[in-house]
Amino acid sequence: MEALIDLFWSKYRDLQSAVDKDDPAKVLLLDRQLDPLLEAIFQHEGADQASIQAQFQFALDLLKEEADDSGCVHRNGHLLQTLVERYLAPQLGRAATVRAAGETGSIAVFESNPNAVLDTVLFDRIPERIMVVAPGYRIFYSNETNALRFGQTKEKLLGRHFADLVGVYHFQRDLREPIDRCLLGESLSLTYAEQREEGTVVVRCRMSPCFSNTSTQVGALVVIQEMPDRRRPRPSN
Image 1: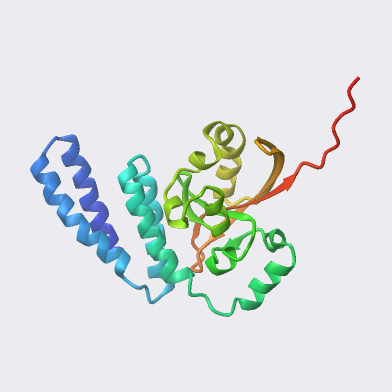
Image 2: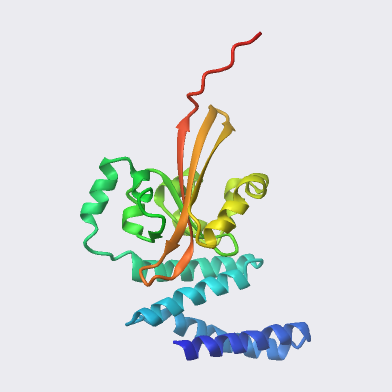
């Protein structure tokens, strides 16, 4: 796996150099060589933690490298979904955990442990909105609840920039620094109010490092709990 990934990045750098030198023939040649390499990397089913970890890390590096190319973001989002479905979706022995989460206030699942493992089965059963934000602020995972909030399927959100979903101003002012801290390993929470058509909504946002089942940090787990504003209005003078 490491040899395939090293070969990909070597040819990828050659491709970038050919683009800079405006050499269309070499660009076409290298592009044709990269496609089967990319396919081989993502189609390989890792039999050990090292191989699986290498695949996830490669996916994160590729997502960050091509974050400004919308076409590549869509493709890389699909590739990320492939890894998630292969390694993380078919998790067994979680039925009791899922049932407990559904019965006891789901956000408490993340309170007792500062780090979380990406468990798609569990997360899709939780009524709160959940996202995993990868380095580069791209969406690595979304649960069903969060996707419905935006009127999209989960797959459509993969690879999108986090700021596209929460608003650029809100992202830059309130959320970028906490996401950065979380990506560095810190767990934190913040509460803020949002003005919507139906009135004021209080949003509690819990962030913690999120890991694959191979102990690779894949991003920041963002759990969003929305509540009605129960603050009493100040009496007018």
